[in-house]
Image (cartoon, rainbow, N blue to C red; front, side, top):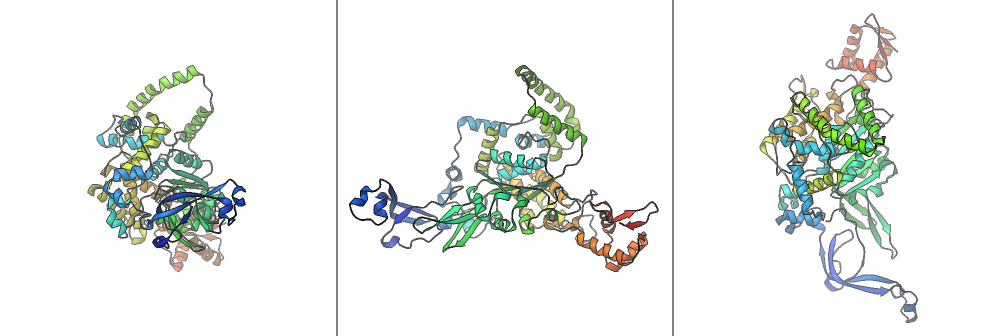
Length: 567
């Protein structure tokens, strides 16, 4: 099916064996002859005078052939399976000029000429991250996740072949990203930048959207027929759907996203219409915490008013906190002043001429210091300081070309890196029991595969290398650490992931037990006796006590004598 296809309606005249050839909701190809009929005649007036009443005409088609293509709605056709390049060009409708192809090739072979070969091979990806929303300072890992979402993984039809796909093998290739953060952290700017560089995109607000506006709605037409109206997810098919204010979406509207985000389609069964429309899009959503500021003592599910099944469908979840940082605040304030400052033409030319020299000097000074470790967390800030961003049009062309023509496959070395990281999360080396592991399922393992394929797409490679998998592991590790980190900076694997719960129930039981003792002052031995009575695990007991002391509404206080007091 064509990307972002909107169902069309036209009156057909069928006879003989073409009757009952299809049903409501099917996607069909019709060959016939177009005829025009006066509206007055079409309404049932057969006299000669009625012909002159109006000069408007209704078009209808006399069908000669009807081919039902409902079985090929979600997959490529046989002709496209033989020629993948022709399929992507025809399906997406993207044509590139020779000048555009030369610029794309130049970016793919870009090299900053510093560091070892692994860092130089990763430079196209780092440069693309630098070029995504350059007006926002920092948030490099969030930009990297959004860029991977824009590129997407390898579709199953090009990985396993058409026969495996039609036999029932369906693997989602689109990557979903959720950005949670305090107000004023630039979440909406990141979403708008994603919309601008995507070849096909739809931007909606969660507080002004309904279920039918996001999915599919039915409408009554003039002749009493039922028409299908496509929503935002269907219009963003094979593209990106950016949803702002995701937390303010009603729960009934959130339920409509469950099938679209995992099965990549939207099914409808209303008013005698049974149909499935493709919604093969990447969802990039931004949400604010429930109480205005993100509480690190609570999980993501507790901070947001979003159902856990919907949160579990996001491959990457980033948390942006407005912490006081002198260096970062100086960079942000200076960047904002530069955006609003008016310069003369001479001053602007002098600053632009001084820019490359300063960047070159800074690159030489920071080569040894910043590139000693070549992980993604050190590379991205270094590239942001030393390189100019690409133009938005070139970035859009590059992402479109990579998404349409590059279909990388996983290699054994990359698969080993992803598997080892998955097993490390499931069975940590320093864990004393199974509960010490971070809860991760095969859904996250599939997300790692999709992200590594998108990472290889950024460099226009046909195979996923070990370096691609290592960058994706670092990105996923950063996302997992943010989800499981509490206010004291410690990792809490017992939270249960993005949909889990914090120790809120244990805290309530512990505080109720303390109040039942009718004491105000407690020693550590008193705490041990109460915890033993409640059978609380001792491995994270004192972490629970610290959370009761340092939360937004503390319930315990530690005195100078070493004893604890109830507030």
